[in-house]
Length: 278
Ligand code: AMP
Image (cartoon, rainbow, N blue to C red):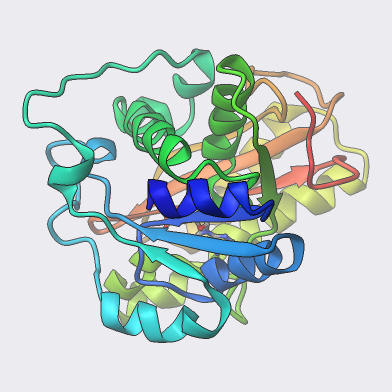
């Protein structure tokens, strides 16, 4: 892969990169489509990265169907990069990557090593692929901010592009993990997004008090008894710092378990563009 990418760069080709863990859905396809529009060559990786899963998380059961993925994206992808785990990680490797306080809050609380694992694998992949641009979904907004910081702090020469969250018809954010939801859980899962829409409506109506917004969202989520909230919060959209009153752009973010399945979602408010500058 590294040799191919060096050759492509030498030929003056612009490389767009879409890292994924596979079991692809329309959310992933939207990133690939965007990369297709903006680059000469599109490289998609499928790699279920062990370093970003905690010991009791779903690494071994994470859904995988590489042949189906391949057929879904064949017409829109130039290279599919699916390295075996032992080619990416050395047996003796023990990295604890430096990441800043962006990784401590929200998903970082219940998944303390998750973002270090994400940063580790993406650092490796960015060195191999040397993309001009890499594409990420807003669903994983905290991940996007952390990757953007990685790129800035290590002076990596690539653009980090944020793409909108793609949803099912009923509003549920598409996720590879949605297949794990049973019928009743699947029925209740769209309430997560509806609670975000409720916050958005209140924000548009001028509500500025974060505690009031969160209280209303939590009350709304009583409609959804199968959801066990991991967190629900409203943070500065650039720094993820806590706020009490709405001022700068904010991210309204939540994570909830349905059984063992952990779903996340968020909305941005008062951000005029998807490209949020830090
Ligand atoms: P994953 O395979 O879950 O690691 O996701 C790979 C990339 O696809 C990440 O940048 C995700 O943010 C993005 N992604 C996942 N689900 C969606 C979605 N529903 N809409 C847009 N992007 C998504």
